[in-house]
Length: 80
Length: 84
Length: 79
Picture 1 (tube, each protein chain N blue to C red):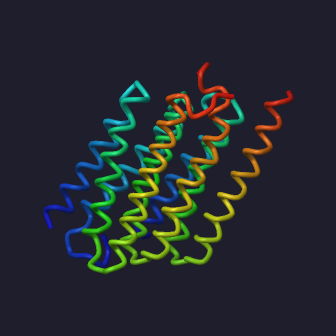
Picture 2 (tube, rainbow over the protein chains, first blue to last red; picture 1 turned 120 degrees about the horizontal axis):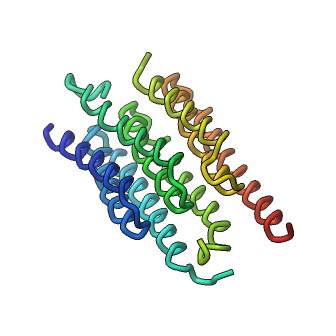
């Protein structure tokens, strides 16, 4: 039960830390930390077999989003 | 949250804080990538609310559609990303 | 007054202000700010257990974002 509160506190800390960061390249690791914490919270919140699939779907989607933002910020594959 | 256990107000406050930080940050950021990151933070805040209601299939669908929306917006960010 | 409803209303109000008065007054800033009230409305639909409406709304939001991106791209390519 303490793990859920710990994960939620990590999510809040990572969100605050990603917000106050000025450099965009340094924001993205903290967003990844928040995504890991939220994926863990989804698993710990419900005792259901589909919770694992939902957390995996959230994990894949959020990681893809963060990587797409990082790739575009770094220049992308082709520059218009 | 509801349906999980008795002590649940702290979790509601924590995840609501994540969503509100993202919403206020998305308005105050001036960089376009900062705005997109803040939209991702909002979704990180509201995903546990969908999970706590028990709609896990809806959470699967929504968490696969929302990053697609962000990637669609990134198509237009790429055009002048080097002079921003 | 469930917590989802209160949080959805707050995010909806913040998002309407953000979409009405975007900080960089550009098309792109307003398009990104348009995502925020969509999440607020998602939470309000979640509070009333309208799951089919929620899925339809998110799908239509993605499609309309694609249409708006095509429109903005065409507008900025040939001003």
